[in-house]
Image (cartoon, rainbow, N blue to C red):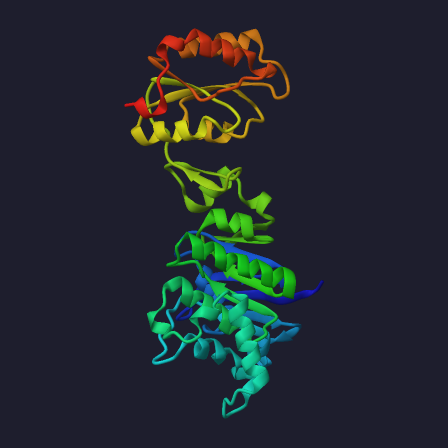
Length: 367
């Protein structure tokens, strides 16, 4: 499928000073492309230049194969809808009327809505689950409800591409997920091209088909989420010096407590993760083991524990590994056993748990 929206050698900036240069972006219909990067890197500047809210300093923006500079406003509005971070504050308008404003490319100079236009507005509000908002004053509804209404307005334009600048800002978890789910459905079901910026890495990793990384006055890297979201590169892109990003879970972990381990955690299969985070919150250094190299909780253990004892995946835990874990556990004043079952491959963890029974504490007892 050909690119529906693309830029060639685009330079963007303010007052004659380029912020980023030689930007080449490509978005196909049915695809979600997300810009990520630190605050102030230029994500919004790129989007504003693409939609011509800012005049590009050089280069070209193509929409459906045509240069946007040569297109009329009405023609662009039939193909592209925009949701930027600027807060919309219409006076004395209901949510239905705000959504209906998206029909302006089709209503002519007098803005008269036909029965077909009204049907499209109702359908757009239904798509964003906003029917109950129709008669409410737009100024009185919540930020999440406003975003749904503004998305309905964009849908009313019947665009082939939607451009959004940090659309989840100011939204609580429910509305973030609902909004992004709607964008995914638009891309999948209507083949809408979606270009947006996000600052929530975990959402960008899960939502995006393609990711563009903006940093150090350049497009640093582009690729599939699994290529972009690595712990090392997120630390590099955002300059992370405290804590880490864990791509396996799409989450941030805080800095591990310093010092010699005071608690040994016998975990596995995800059972140890709540204990690790509790210990981190309390500032108690700890060790973890014995974890198989393919265990789901190993990335979190490595991020938060001072030491981790591991064993080869799909193999019985060896005696040498057990001795290492035993010595480390014996050096810790307290032991938490998060496991309730050990299985045939977890015999060494069962032995550790039996050996340390007199030092067992429950997670809620840790101080």
